[in-house]
Length: 149
Image 1 (cartoon, helix red, strand yellow):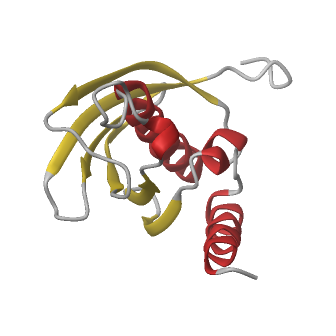
Image 2: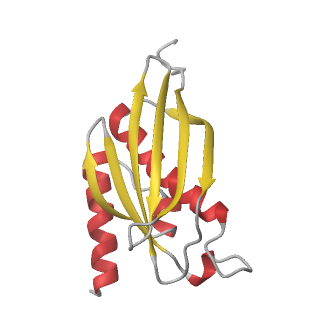
């Protein structure tokens, strides 16, 4: 098994064990879990591939936002367990470009967990620890049709 495949398998196993999920969109972006603190924080690194680049040669903003979503979602799932949630909003601010061959390292933190919503923030850095982008989101708990909520 190659180092890349081993790393991917390790991350998927960690996500499945710790968070109970490993969605296709996460696997597509080849995220690698670095740290998970239940109910609090999740750090995941994403390689910056050539096919993520815009015409200027840097990672397209949509892929950066998708990377944020691929951290917020598992963090939210990790703290809610089997409760279904959905994204209400996701705001991204871009600070500097990131280029192919680098790594986008995102740490998301739960700021507030209420009865109906979870508010999270995140920052993305490159391998040189320079701030690339920041984001915030709100996730809402979905009512279960089986429980009559």
